[in-house]
Amino acid sequence: MAYNIPDTYKNQTPAPQLDKGTLNKMVWRSLFLQASFNFERMQAAGWLYGILPGLEKIHNDKDDLAASMSHNLEFFNTHPFLVTFVMGIILSLEQNKADIATIRAVRVAAMGPLGGIGDALFWFTLVPIVAGIGSNMALNGSLAGPILFLVVFNVAQFAVRYGLMHWSYRLGTDAIGILTANAKEFTRAASILGVFVVGSLTSLYGGTKLGIEIENGEAPIVLQTILDGVLPKLIPLSITLLLYWLLAKKKWTPIQCIALLLVLGVGLSFLGHLLNISFWG
Image 1 (cartoon, rainbow, N blue to C red):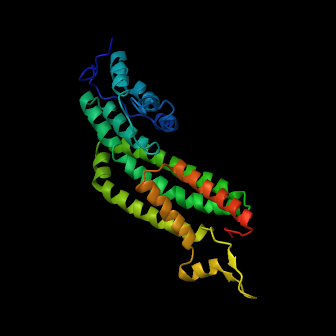
Image 2 (cartoon, rainbow, N blue to C red; image 1 turned 90 degrees about the horizontal axis):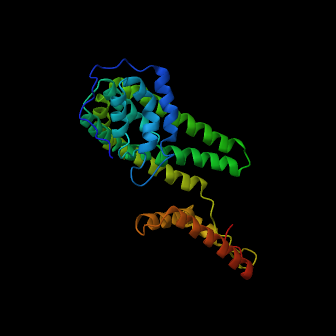
């Protein structure tokens, strides 16, 4: 028998403010947001697990707690690093015993814009920059490369998690207006920055080059030198544009692109061995 969620909570008296220890505990629990990910309710189970310590302190009445847990188990999906922003807002509404329909609506409204913002901030900006620097250091034999990546990435994500939790809980529903007012501009700016960063990394770290030389007496013609005269890093740029075209136009997956690069690398190396030439420098 399905549980009937009421429209309002039985106890309408606002609960005391949550202490910092409880808020911080929920920040750590937010790491498990996708631990029970499923295609029916997405992150709902992880969302409830993360927010539960706050709900237990807010709702002393067992029926109210059951109602709160039930509607917080409904469909939920947002960016995993920015989820504490939604947590803070919902906890503020729960604390003030807002109508359950209002809490539901705000939860859906708050979780939506965070996907684009989080992707632009982390996957399109922070990760390419730090991973590119760390990878280059690792390729040069430095153990500090992967350590740098892990330190910078985790410091950034935990700073965002903690900061958003305390800030959005303090502001309540006003935080949504601040977010949505500039969400489009912020996402576009971060995306443009990400494009510049990826282009710079391609130029700086792209090391693919041809090793083919054409006999020409005492001064053989080096094909890579000719290409560099046309446009330096032409081959890395061409590979990058090819992968972009496959991802954007042909709807390839990243795994398919990685497989293509693997096949090209092994295949051309094998062909070069048979022909006694070097395709790659």
